Image 1: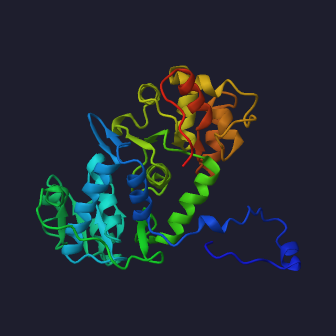
Image 2 (image 1 turned 135 degrees about the vertical axis):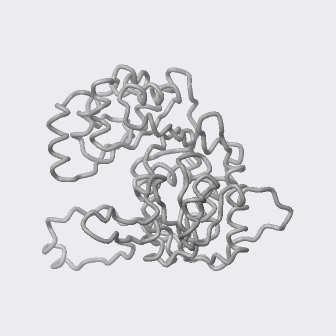
Image 3 (image 1 turned 45 degrees about the vertical axis):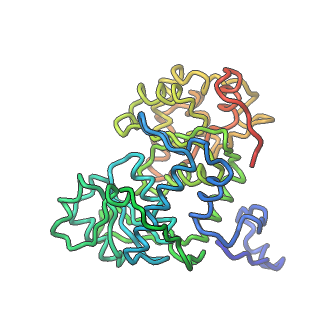
Length: 359
């Protein structure tokens, strides 16, 4: 997917049933994930990057903390392209540790907090991971695994030692590896390169148009690759991420209210979540209000691009939720829906945000 090959007319005719997008070589750059975060930290050091409960970090603070984590990992021997496990509870520290691994030039292997230690160890050994980043609360469970352990508390502890920056990180190095559920046997790891994920982030946002003034709901587990569309597109443009509480993530009454209270302008969702929202659309306030002020699913100035027009109907109660749930459940199809400009318009009209120029 990273290499563009121009097809001869005869080849094009043979593949006439394939839908091609425009060739945009400017979206494919010699960069790694950490470059994206660092660029936003330079542009918007005071912009809020992460919000979790009562805690928040600006881009400058996130970059500084992640830089310290990276420095300690590098001093411990972690090298670009090596794989480091990531096992922490959902929250702000989890994303700081993830960014720290990225700034070290290494790749992370994310694991949910409730992952059994036996499965964790299988994945770590299969990936030849050099160690795992966790926390004091989970550390005792790793005591007999023999894994090299770094805790978030130790990595974030103040130090007077000079910071060490990554050296030799390349776009073809690994960025992360995610493992399948293993329900049919041994879990299998899928490794993604720095080049590929950076290309994906730039390509997707060329369509979605998320910008620094947006507030994005971070709801997916970091062990699910859809979390990249929440976290790293935000870092790409300098937007704000609100890390929602885990207990609210599937609650059709609580979550819409929280999204409204937090002035969330970008929501990435799967059909099952949208189906829940369709019954409680009224509590979405300006989000839904903005969505109903346009002339159809893809109205003229609408920059809320929807991958699957059907899902738009579900989200706004225009299509039977049970029908769409059955269809996508049967096909095991993940559908991404991003609500951007129509939400931004509603929030702007409500006086809760001001427009900023696109970076």
